[in-house]
Length: 137
Image (cartoon, rainbow, N blue to C red; front, side, top):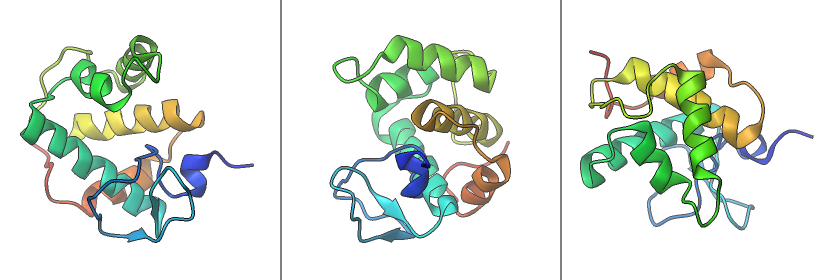
């Protein structure tokens, strides 16, 4: 059976929220959003990370993951270490809204942590291209 995040087309397992994302569909999952396609799920991930950056000042993997996967629910330290290792981006490296190449790698690594399977980089890039909040330098 496919992992829940993949079945829901929500590879980062974004929880239900007041926000409505492009491509979001009525969810049959009691905890997590569902999207029309995996690409829209990745789009929602990038938009969420842009919100983390601009609204909360979360500009490093360490800061992002501490909010995204808090210690009261997760092994946050292991999550941070895995994302840094698999993305090749240092846990304390400062990101900006023009760090698209690094965000793509980070989202890929987060998807791996959330689902236990390697993400398809072409799907991630397609999701990136569906949004305009984070750009390439």
